[in-house]
Length: 311
View (cartoon, rainbow, N blue to C red):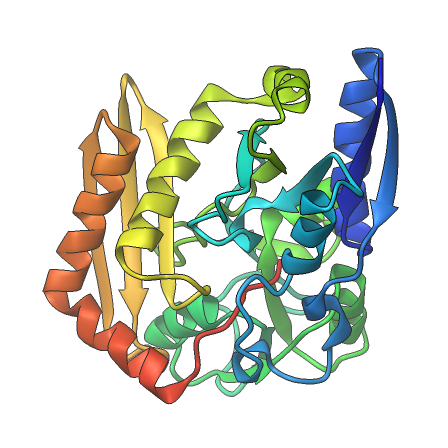
């Protein structure tokens, strides 16, 4: 078999994901290597991504390598990918999804409810911040960037009383010692695609697409397609204060979603069931827009505070 070249960011989590896919491909007899490709988002660590405003901050350079034939496939966190791919690419597989929820990490406190007033909580996500402010406006929510190890180290050093991260990244890296609470999705709705991986290939590369087919999980594909359809309907090109979680319940797809003002003073929620992932996502997205989401998002973009979300 021909050698397959995987493109990946260089973070510990990104490399875990790339190595996980490489191991699965090697079990099928493929010769696989990984090429680390730094992205814009990896290079800018001392500035809030909200102030940078670059689309595809964690994917652009990798996609350039893919388009140029330097690599054959890219392994992404699905939520890093824009909802509309450039015409030269396609998602060949979405493997089985990890836990999509957010978690509270702390060395002192067991839950959001237990945090004292003015407790310092770190997050890099406007979506998380907005939902947290809605239920605990008394907290001191502070900017936090860096890879998972960096953020956990800052927590351990006492810079924060708690931080909020994606369960998936911590589970994959086996770094669960600080996890105190799995935050229910009706309290903090996850980002669209959170916990899922995406295998991106060049459009029309039938050989590589065929080699990836065994990795595609039907349930993960349906759920994330639904979530991304909602995000696309709402104009979520960057990660804005929108959450979406779709799950197969019985024989139907159930979607719950949220859009919130960054200060948490308004949180709009909608949910519905359906059979067509795209139609369901677009329908719930339209309901949120009509309910007041359009005004919220206009304010977010006008103020220039939309940001790309990290784990």
